[in-house]
Image (tube, rainbow, N blue to C red; front, top):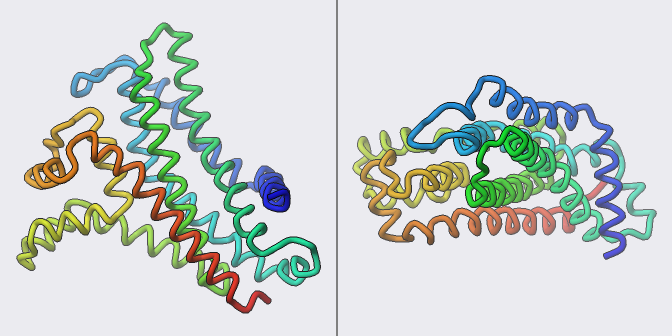
Length: 275
């Protein structure tokens, strides 16, 4: 355990010096600042006003930005160290492979989630200072959603990084995965279902296997419990899970997917030819 935390601290220290982390932090901090500048706290959409409206917009923007940032930066972890010859040095130190691999995951998760969470905290602090009501239930659930989504794509990124042999291949695979998940959102699935006469249950099942779709639908469910915008597929989702059940599923499924992906990545990493 001590080796794991030392590895995590080392990864955090390296990340804090990286240029991509500064851009990553600036992006999410800048999004919150721009939302306040453009006066979203004063607008009303679907009955949501004040900070609620800002959080709804922020969570939608995060869905597009967070996964690709996490994937591209994470896949460089194992693949980049392999290219740089770090593994030869690693094998000469009293650090187990498990401590190194899972330590990097812990350290990377902290630096990935912290800017996203701190941006939301900054929005709350500004709202309190301005006298705007804070929807604490929405803030708490959206924070949990972002934490689950960060864990999901971090695990997927570590799996890709362990499977690929070069940084270029890892980044290409990460971008391909992100693009595939985007393609299998509502509209594409609906078109495939109509053309191929696929059963609605199958199409919805494929959609709910997509963590991006789960994340998006859960965000919608918070201000549209009946999921009216999803059309007929909402009946199948609500009949299967219920509103509260689906909210819980949206938190558990990405975490489990990320953990299983990370565990698979560790097995590949442990059994592979490290040098």
